[in-house]
Image (cartoon, rainbow, N blue to C red):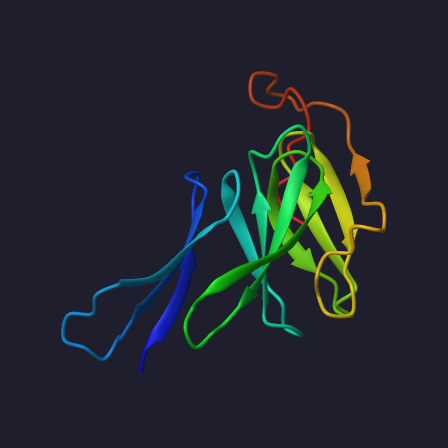
Amino acid sequence: MTRSLLTSGYGGKIYSLSFDPTQNAPALVIDSTTDGGPASTWFSLSERHAILYAGCEFAEPDGEVRSFSYDKASGRLSPLNAGKCGQGPVHIALSSDGRRLFTANYSDGSLSALALKEDGTIDATVETKTKRYTGSGPSEERQEAPHVHGV
């Protein structure tokens, strides 16, 4: 009974790992490595399509979300396309109807909404809607501006 795991970090690679929890000493095996973009630190899997969305936290000058086809059997990811969002996407959520992808953008304190095509890829022909927030918190050293964490 092999299990799969997708992981990444600030290094820009997405790793597809597998392990068998029934083994006496289960070991993680790297099945594939994919370029995930600048710090692909948040993933969301589509419930409707075999697609993984990855937020590129350090993409500049705008934030970016990349989409990948995901082969669950092999763990392989293949790049599909990308869309722009606010700076520093740190969380992704998909609408229940599968038509929108939302990002929480830490660096510029915003929320973004990207359109998705019927096949689940990002629709770059539709302008991304981004709402930026202003203000600060009581601890100016840490809260000099909004830092949206979730959506």
